[in-house]
Image 1 (tube, helix red, strand yellow):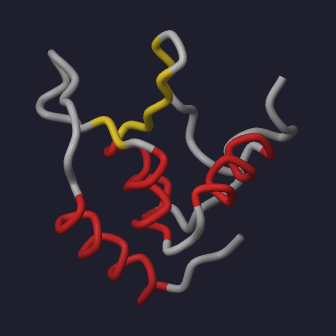
Image 2: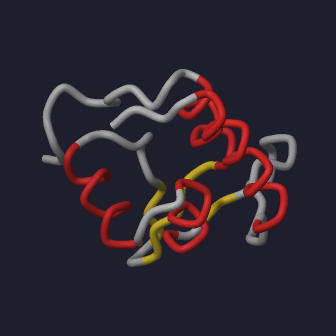
Length: 92
């Protein structure tokens, strides 16, 4: 997966519009994003987000019980880095 520079800038703009969620307590306001928000930022389906997570493309998610979220800062850093694979192999 490779996002063009224009896509990354668009993703940042999309993020500003769709950001809604809880914040991490001591992380300086980092937001936790749900799958639908991540999908909207990346302009893909929710199923694609899950597949990329399982294949090791996305930054690590945070799971509390059965609720899965991603750190906004981690997603944006990943986009800024050109969306590199985050793990050599898929989820364990």
